Image (tube, rainbow, N blue to C red; front, side, top):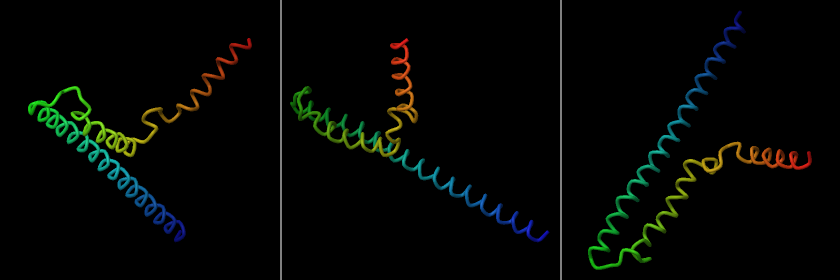
Length: 112
């Protein structure tokens, strides 16, 4: 009976540890997501202000200089996006497998 009690205590401790670890991972993901959204908001606000200032001070709207900050900062924002959401966001987790199956099906139909 004592062994059963020790096993149960060990299982409860392990379960508690796994739940806490899952909570910490989820909390880290939420903080990363929040950081990306703040980065996106500041990107939009600051770049709108820069474009307005450049145009109101006699600069041309459609020139590289007007949008240079937005372009280069946008590249950094894109990499931040990939860091938060991962490359799976663009293609999905099973994208490669689905594409292989799609091409295999086309090949099969071609030979029938």
